[in-house]
Length: 211
Image (cartoon, rainbow, N blue to C red; front, top):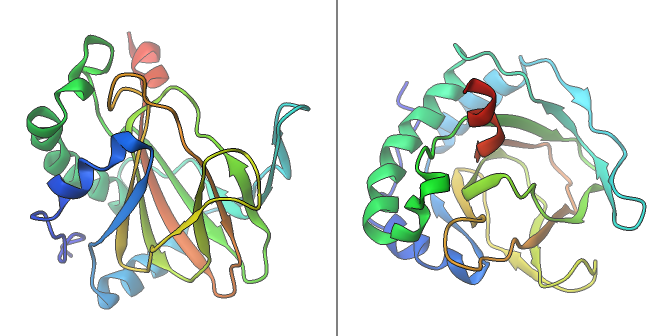
């Protein structure tokens, strides 16, 4: 199965250039048939409930979803990460040379998480991803609904809903994509149908572990 049978590579460069401003953008990526097949694969994974509260006591993050953070390397979802890696490598070189700084020269999608949000769950409150997730965050939406919102601050009541539908790939900037980049706060709310996502990131800490 070609997991990227609807990847619109021609639109990625322009959308990628929007990310240093702290936004998130989504592009059509997969057919409904591919989404259904990948959703079936996702349901065969072994999930655990997310920790209800994480972060610090001063800035708690509230979570209500399921996740699998131990997807085996032989799983087809890692082939998706590899395919996306081959797409983004030349784009990062050509369109965002800042992302090829010495500290991020080994960019690779080495961190993969699958999340499942049951209908009626609270999702996740406004938060920022770990500072060691570098350059770009990718999220593939396989099914469901809900509001993916980017917030200027941690406030729950402010922010913009990103148009992000099943079959689309969301791109969100991360440190290293541009000088002085500020990680955006983001959240997921209002899930009424099972939301399944594959998140793919470059975790610089994993490079250190291999050295």
